[in-house]
Image 1: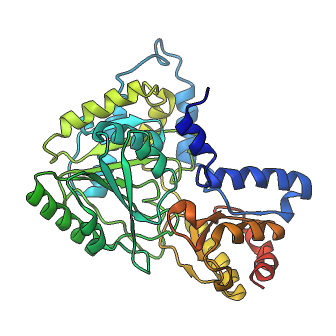
Image 2: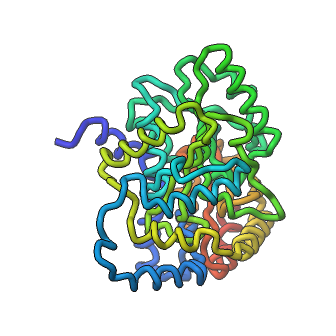
Length: 394
């Protein structure tokens, strides 16, 4: 028999509403045609990988040396770990070495390894809401409890509320910036205030929670925005990320964990994550793409088309009369449900399907009364959706 807790989860509303909408979209497109369906459900980047990545793939594929497809150390190839250390060093302004890195099977694998390494039964992980829906399941996997703390009205961090939620059971605070689903970038001032609160809590209780920074959208920013570093502000900080979004490689499942070298238990943490990667069944990150990203992790990508599509979609929503949070990064638009729907985002998303608009209700992201649109779709889809949004708003 299927485990009871799994059956309960997959039958719940929040199990995977995004995937459910995505799969419905496939069927609707078959039935009515691609150009009639406006599928904003899934954050599947539609930019092609840059030429540097394609060249690295070709070069790596031509390697027929003996043992090139064999096992490597569980934490990953040394040269790949060093490349990721160089990447995070540049982003954080703190020098990392290969020993501070574990290569993982995407950012999801990275987060699961981190939580399995950190959480004892009943431990708490604080997350500002709204947040990526799968966080609930990742924390629950290891008998932890996700503590959802509402963000401010503009979706910036409410550090006072986060500080008020800290307890002796708090193992970590998890932030995602640019944020999925809002596109919000947490400011340097917010990061400084948050780390000050964590340090004050640590001094008071003796337990310094880890600050986990989930950053797969770090490079996708608009209007000159920057994602502030965290490592200079807080010792117990960890970065998890992947190349799914910035290099458009979601299906290749290549990610990493980077631990602040100033963390007092950095070596032990890396060992724990490496062990968890093995026991979770991943064993190691995909060998082929470890070699690829080591060669092209710093490839230049033009994200201006995402900005153009953001602006096209917001112009349509303005015309239709929707309220939304203008994203500073990533490729999501978080939109308020019209007032007459009384915050019933699930019902409104179902209603929009009548106009062949597919979106994700906000309750799955911990924010009732809103819905998410992923605008990493063709410009044609966005332009052609105008009439449908105006009709849905009526």
